[in-house]
Image (tube, rainbow, N blue to C red; front, side):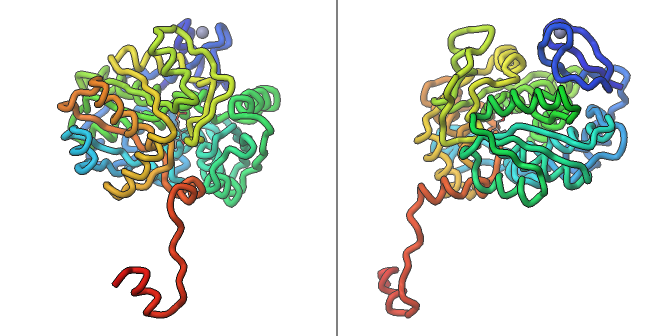
Length: 401
Ligand SMILES: *Cc1c(COP(=O)(O)O)cnc(C)c1O
Ligand SMILES: [Zn+2]
């Protein structure tokens, strides 16, 4: 069994209480297991397919989950980029290979399963795009309703397409993501919809399996895990999961959790660099990496602990660095990711140059979403195909043959 525990005041709550923050102090909640009472056999895990549900003993869902076989994503050894950056063991965990094309599916398979267990028939979120795509997919699979609030004009085309075709009730807000989240949070509290943003502690339970899979795939713990940070749910989730593995005696050390943000949207980076205990919200976040265009990261409290407790760090990269790395990953490694995802590797490049990352470290970058999520940004960057008449001389001439 599990319970909900406030990360600030330590108050405990029953797992079926529908709360998103501590009713006593307003801080974040986390799902807490009695790890000592769990009978977990690591060899049993290894026999199951690599997926979110390999680790079901330390997930909150008791019944049959709503699943589309999420997780089990490839971990690629980046040999060419690694050589260029001077890191022998550089890896990318390609979360774009999930059913809806981002790591959000790991959270939603658990979150929507919990919604059903809690008797909810309508789920809701605010989203820079991927959360809405994933929620729409899992609500469709579960046969329930999804309401998604999107910041008008700031959601990549592929993500909007997904929310629409999978049948979500999509609403465009004339405001940014942070405002959309405030609104949907209030809507859920007052009207009983089930909120599946990353403030929901059950969603983060699914996302923590990224760290479990990395360790199973590497056959050991990396020295560092680097990921793009928006609401900071994912970095917090992976850290929580790895702490649980350590408590279970399965690993000894935690990797240095390293968060990368875009220069135009870097409240976590500022808090880490200035040694603040709380983030100062960014009123007008702006970046080409729309998935991390977030000024008020709701999981900041957890993320600051994750970074500090593991000796990690946070760094910001420019939009130009992000787009250059997106292209490098595509052309030198054959890995297609959306801009936010490339931020993790752009951050590694910068941190190596700054001497923060040691060349001998074993570094895993989480690349969070698929290239096809945001085709418009790609088309703006690349030269269009050359159009010619449909004859052989024209073809040979354009190829200079
Ligand atoms: C959601 C998302 C992020 C940010 O994750 P947080 O948990 O909000 O920090 C980064 N990249 C992509 C592609 C995403 O969809
Ligand atoms: Zn509390």
